[in-house]
Amino acid sequence: MELKVKNFNLKDTITCGQIFRYEEELDNSYTVILTDRVINIKQDNDYIYFTSNIEDNLKEVIINYFDLEYDYDSINNMLINNNSELKDIINYSKGLKMINEPKLEVIISYILSQNNRVPQIKKALDNISKCGGEKVIFNNKEYYLFPTIDNLKKLSIEDFRRLKCGFRDKYLYEFTHSDFDIDKIDKLSSKDALDLLMSMKGIGEKVASCILLFGYHRFDVYPIDTWVKKYMKDEYNITTIKDIKLFCDKRYKEYSGLVIQYMFNYKRNKD
DNA sequence: CGCCAGGTGCGAA
DNA sequence: TTCGCACCTGGC
Image (cartoon, rainbow, N blue to C red):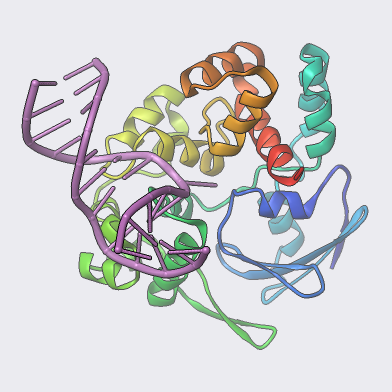
């Protein structure tokens, strides 16, 4: 199946740190595990080509997952008009979309991320999926969907430890056995949402920010990672997280989360 | 070996 | 309120 796109960069969108469970294939396509299916997707200029083990609504699923109907162009133009210093990084990063990743998977992923490395996080997520997720055969390979909350509840602390989650085992167990209402977050202000997330063990400010930005499209909440730090130091000689946040909130307001993604993408790929 | 990574919880001051 | 430290795991 194919779809015409404009201002979409598949590679940047998939590889800029939003999701963990994807593979780059030899033909430069990507295989990505979504909620209910596995897809393979490839871009050639203004077209994306995709296949899946499930064809039902595939186009709609792709459009939703890669956020292709959200109007990034207007926001980008507005940002550049108000902040001319953003011209370079936005032109470099335009085509980067914020993925609509399943919320439960985002939460589990970022609980795993504390004091951890990306390959290790991915391995733990794969282990968890193998244990409680539905098996999918796609292009003669086995994949495992991310488990439902009911299946995650079947895992003990020892199971999480065995699945290489490390000391985060107890946080995962407590979260999955809590009465945390994943959809309630959408009804809260960003501050209340942050507080609610941070009331859970293993979720601090950084992890909560990642969850809200990547899982809930809250562009006014965002983490500051090493690449953004590097960018802000090199461009403005601003070094503390507090000052970086003050700077971004003042200039980029409710779109700061989007801007820091552009900074991240620019700084990390420009070397 | 020791160090550290997409931080956080905890006890001590 | 702030500070220092321990923490699974595995790659360097």
